[in-house]
Length: 314
Length: 267
Image (cartoon, rainbow over all chains, first blue to last red; front, side, top):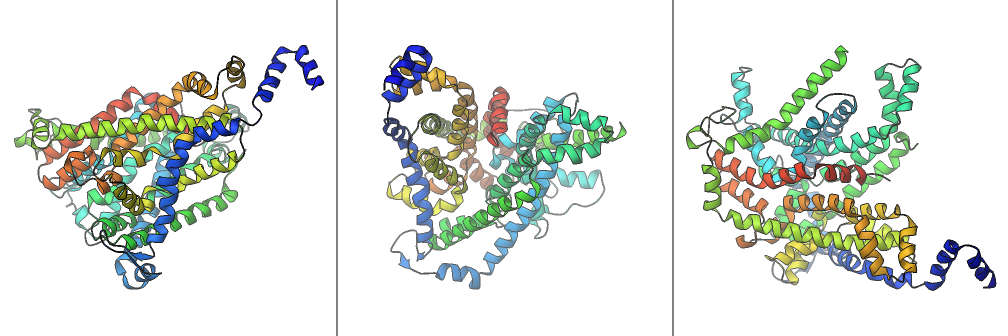
């Protein structure tokens, strides 16, 4: 105590901070919980309880109205053994993810690299590439529905009048509807990753390039040995976020194709929505939700383990 | 040199391809009935007829107002709550702080589709289906804003806070008079971000609003598309109407938006 008093005489600033610590021995706690309460309650009620409830509901036959009855693992077993649509939906979702994620990353990386060099009109291009990210997904998908139309669509017009080949019915074809959906989604989404990767490229110190240039490294070598390794933390972030969101694709199939033709573009979340809110099988929908949750968690976990092999934190 | 020229041409073409659907949307929205199926890039007789139709055939103004209201209220409350939580997590010392942050952070992995069914049932039990409360309340809580604000608050120098505390300011005054004003730039960025996200949100409003008077504008245009599938010009006009506020917001707050995305990943 006495020592503290002495130090107070020595330096006012030191004393001030000492006094703060004395005056607020443990009272931060009460205030902190007060500040956290609105969010804490919100997360508890609207996120944490629902995630548990989702699992519980998945163990029931749960109609929209009326009594729910315990089903045990029946919903999951029905999905696995007696619902061929589910397997198709799972395949659709994975082919979307495997098509969309790499295309998105490659395109955004290429453009981010180009934008990082000294060029005119850079800002204009950045705005253009980012614009579809901010315009509403529903409106974007509606425009693309029109673009893809046979005869009245611009794409068909281009194929017929410029390339002189007949265009297919993109969204009406079992094989082409999914690629068409992926193309539309890449158009809509790559601007976001372009920005993330641009930020990453800006964070690389110029001296490193200069050093590599003095060593006589070609621009391609510099890209491979300097840029790419230093960019990996940003690539990792972009990759994981894109992966997580792409498993949840919903609006594009809902607007572009309604999941068809047949069920060829029905994704996991669209199927979940249809089961829950069109067929009113809430238990079944929740089982799908948990399967989605497990897929997302697993994919994320794999990425976090795998990052040790390719991500450089320097 | 040649290499970079080729690259430039490719990117220029990509830029053109990227902008053309949106350009086509605006151009199509301005085409009259007679020109609706023409492939002219710029309409010969531009008209606002389609917009007039969209706003009179449907209570579109009402849907726009709903969206503005919901997105606006969510944004304001979310910024307020998130900044409070972030202040506590960044500036106050209390037991369990790191654990709580981890719990909040982990909710990032729980996405809407995963909890769609229980959330619907919960909102129904609270009698909030087809209500503004049902649209607003569940949309407020997400870890993203808390995470970004906490990062920002960690970087604020201690001295400012200490001076206020020496002057006898309580926690609330420190938060309200010091922390909040200092975080104006990041709050502005997040505001743009939240508003856009909620203006564009689709799955949740689709799930809980069957009453058309509570429809948000995205639900309205999706149903409009199903009704008017053959009238390109109306669909284009409807798309322009919902996209316009987002484009304007983007052009005016470009810098804030870009900054918030750039900082979202790291540090």
